[in-house]
Length: 287
Image (tube, rainbow, N blue to C red; front, side, top):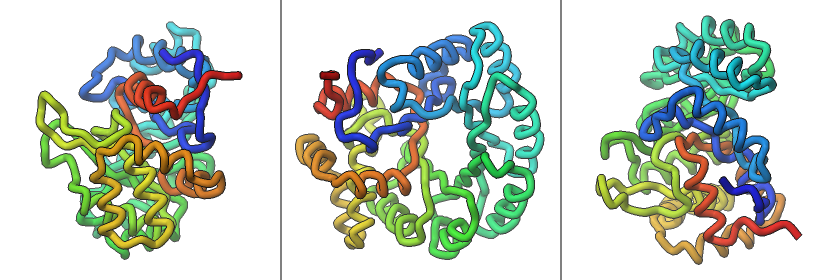
């Protein structure tokens, strides 16, 4: 664990890394994942770590792990893979657990046609202090969908990786989605494949992985109304020095605005992204 460092460029990395340790490819056992999460949140790097992400079918395991760890006040985001019809029961279970604080619910919607009903249901069942993240297929992240989400209090979830090459959007596809969310001011989170700071090809799978610094730079570019090709080029670059320089040159208000758009991403490893930004000198020792 990083326990002697603090963020360098300020707000950029605060609560950026949602702790999805029990999800593939990490697949940590729930008791170990909860203990590790508590360790991260109490460390000097705690401000960088977002909520613990728990799949709704594993809620009882999560509650048992909280009891064993004698934990309290743990922020949690619940994923409801079975769809919006199961959200109400998941929320009720989470709100009945005093040791956990439900901060968000993540739910897939199979197509743009079902988005209206999904938003209406989430409006009904989610408490005001709980954020809804709607995961749409990439092709459904169009202007109509962004308009609808912008008019609601719910956010967008975009899949950027997984077990198959088809789970990774191209630079052009992701650039287009980022541009639309920024244009319509729809906050988004990403999930899958974003363990590292800079774009790279995985040596084992051969899959092309997006980098979270690339996404930050691309979001900042979209905020400046750059065209898709410019945003795409930032997602494609492997120049770590260039990306690091861009992070340092972002003015504080621009950095805050970037994070209002790019809320967080789920990662099954907190160590990897933290190590990357440490190696790139985007974390600095306290004075």
